[in-house]
Length: 186
Length: 136
Image (cartoon, rainbow over all chains, first blue to last red; front, side, top):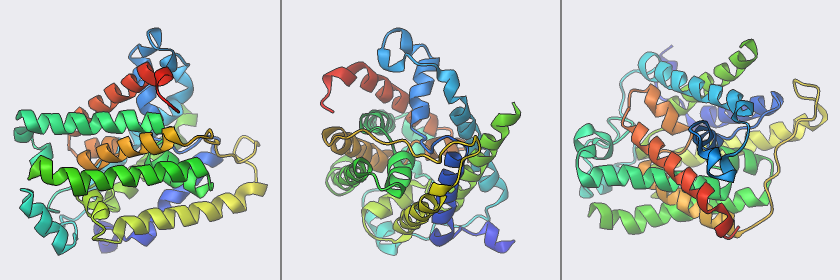
């Protein structure tokens, strides 16, 4: 039981994620979380104005159900399957984060410096979350998939477009962390 | 309703695995892009290797509906994948949340992530609006 409550090692989680992808393919569907963003736009009525959103969203109900399950799974894992432990980050990472103004790194899933309500009530804090979310939403649809659709499903099925997209994910991530973070948080 | 139960179950397992793997943590994403831990590379690497094997083995088996086990083929192209991917990566590293974890984090009680989701919906909408004007 103790092993369940502790963080699970990567060599357990990676294969489990592959089995989740495989299960959805076995069910005749696919593993792609970002498609739900498009579905939500359609449900909100975006299809009346923009052709890209003009599709029968009811065919995507299965994927919205996966989303509902994911929220429940997050709740179960966090409140019932986790002993309070810090994330075992590299000490160098903690040191660099401290120099950027991020204290208590790894003591929660998300940094208070970005996600606490105090931060969000400041203009800069709110702007960071909005810009971050916007780039994720725009980029994932432009690239036709996210970590689940490209990095896991696309690479597992040896698709070149997914490899290019994943290279893009890393290009963007490296630019953000190494070039932009010192400017944004410096 | 019953036919949706299996998807709910898959979603629950997905949420649990991503929390227990710490892949939903902003810190793990930051550490990955700093190349200071093997953790995230281990998760993605073993997921892809397991995925390749499972998909290869399953080629001769049928899915639950009696059809072929097929993975949707991505369209050919380069610009959309590298540009879209880079834009996604910028947002992923900044917010620490990709489109699966952003929902899972709500379940962990991090309600402020809803702001990220709303902004992601706006980004998706703007892409739909500009789709025909963008190079693909």
